[in-house]
Length: 288
Image 1 (cartoon, rainbow, N blue to C red):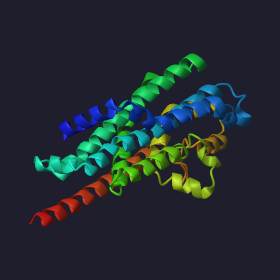
Image 2: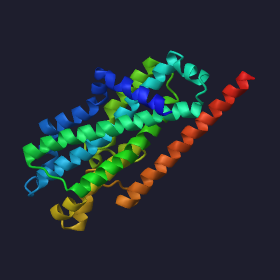
Image 3: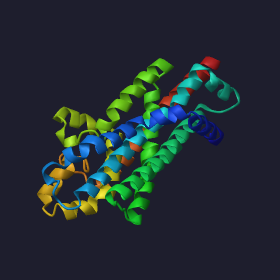
């Protein structure tokens, strides 16, 4: 499993154009924010001291959420290529079980996602540090980096479930284009979640990536929310609108968002295990 993971890492990072396109949605989010969204989102509260740094942190959280989604899907494209070329069967003939094979892909996708999130975070942090004098407490950085592990694994499992229905390159390209397009909306990076229609907001809340982005944003912004919006009602309004906290019957706090994300991790892990178990049983029956 670890050898397969290492092999997938090498193949991913050797494909420079693939690495770039896996980050394209995150790059678009960054460019749109700098060019258009920053002043637009600030709106009427743009005069509040500290709003620039607040929005920078908001964008970093959302862009990391996009990166976690798109890079895992891009990394798992290797699974489709191996399936088309019958490389998967070659691995199985060497005695590698389907479980080890599948989780080799999952592990490599999670590692790639984690590395790319670190890279994106460093680039954005350095940029905003020099442009807007942004600084982030070390404790927040440690928490954020730790959450990236969870975000990477969850999105890797979600992408693995998606790949169950993908068997050729054409379908993969179509899905990759779709995910790359909608990922910025799903985490509320292109448009604040509160501005979306109610049905669209409902779809966002069904997406694991939105909870990951919410965790990132709460980690980076909870202290600033109290300083910028002393009134609880106003704070909750902006938190909901900007997707810092997701709302069902109430706004989910950090612990509730974390437990929801862990629950989604368990759910998608079970789905992957069940699917692989059924496929393994089916293949064993065919052998007999």
